[in-house]
Image 1 (cartoon, rainbow, N blue to C red):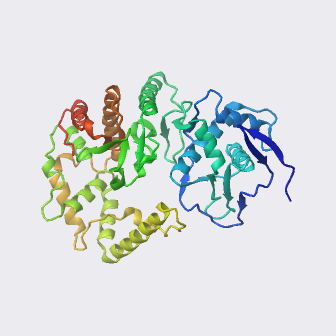
Image 2 (cartoon, rainbow, N blue to C red; image 1 turned 90 degrees about the vertical axis):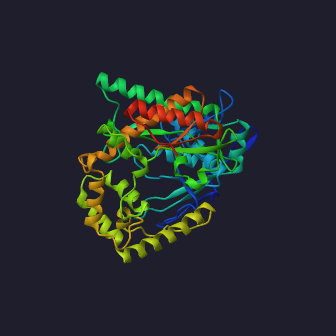
Image 3 (tube, one colour; image 1 turned 60 degrees about the vertical axis):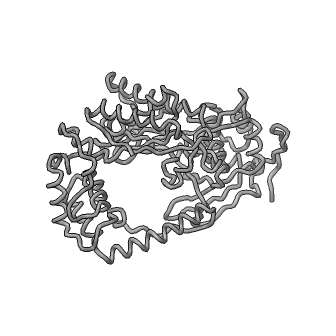
Length: 451
């Protein structure tokens, strides 16, 4: 039985505010994943064309609704939540995705749940609420045409929330640490944040599309423990497979991805005052280039050679290679079904899959391979296995990338960072390549190879 219906108007659209809307489905102890999910990014916001756009109007209506249970309404709490939810729904609708959200009832999440329920009550979203189970509460929603129409009428677009910092410093458990209090650290933090915010601000006047569908271009820089470790740029577009990234367009123009060759090896050699020979970076007598490259990537991100030895031995085992191939095939089918919006359950991922190294021949002698690598790169062996080497190398490559992006921004060339590569319009290839080479030389004192 339905509760009393509150008939109200929202820009000419009749809204039905029900306690138990027909478009809300609740499941009991059942894991219900969305067919093609996208988790909420609470750094996104919705910017309307008018000064009092849909976000402000919904906030006012939420304040007077039964879904707001507080005594005092704080706009500073609810406006960003409404804004972020609408931005995620707008993005999901453009790509035929569903938005997964949490219904865990801890204090910080309660306002989010009440807004989701409010939108369902307005019949602006269809929502499926999962029951509690060993995988947590998996709930998801999709925007209904009425909401999308309102967003389009308001010429709403997705922006990076300018009330939130565009960089994060996180601890080992990925908890975001507070802004440093020491003046010198704070100045450095503010300088890095200002540059990243300026990069995001540039994208307000440019667009990125994939097969005519809008792609959100905003990024965050993520550091580990301090500004001395990590610092790479992260954005949702980086999860697009490289073969699909080739079809990205910036302002409707075709793009190209420019990549630093063997950047971490080159940085380590530069730290030792040596210009790396790029033609020999992945050359090791008796081994295929793909094998050497795979080992190099692991070797430069370990703190124990013993761990790498175990990974190579595991990866060379024919039985494990067959299991890994079967897992990859099943996973590819699952990802393809998800991409088409079809229901699919992800295959079980054994823990050893994380340590598996592709392209390791079954005839590989672990001891011989590692010794050959260390002998080939004897100039940098003191760095291999050293404390936080992977994060220190990321800090170095992110510093280079930050300078590249800032220089391109000043030249009004929008660029998307993908760790050690950038995506730019093809017409800017020569300029971007020169900037990448000059920046690497400026930071390291040595030459880069761009491919």
